[in-house]
Length: 267
Image (tube, one colour):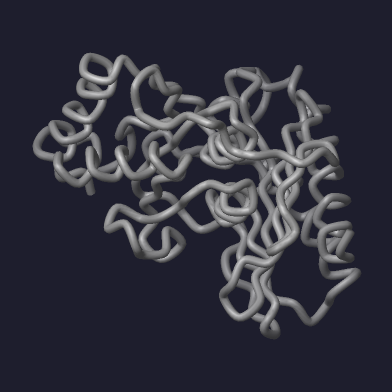
């Protein structure tokens, strides 16, 4: 296993311990609202500090992009960190959240870790070396169409997305088409990182979401690709890290989901 991946695993497990120790105390946590349905707690910050401490101890010259700390410049290696993806779930005691860590070299995702501290499932990937769940090789599902597929998604629920209009209408059309035309089963999990990990391991057949940040999806992108899946933005060829819009899935599910999103003007 690559040394960077070992460090990422150690950091994710440390963060997971911090998070789970506070799970029974969520009703007493001080919660700050960064935006509508966009929360942060001292648990997010404590977990992020623990991750950064481990990284900097091993690689003090590396850069970091973290959800709470922002951009901390360094050399050509950059660690992209989400210390608690699914904070809203966490603050409700809903057990669907994760820690996401990716290592980029010159902008290319080289290593990835997504850790579910509740199930203790550890998803890992290194570029060109495949993807693993708890050290066992994983692949995307063999689903060949949207029909009866299980699709992760997120309906607009933040800021300008809450305004009525085309954004709501286009997403509603996609959701309606998935359910009534394709008999697909949408799932709103509340953690983009877990959605992508589930696609990589075949638990979901596809996933799409708009307006994400790089720390939400960097690790998951590599996991899906190394598990044999397809990932793109809504243009079909762009890089989701740049746009924040992502579609992931098996080859055919990705293709059909991309067509559906484009036809309905989802942005």
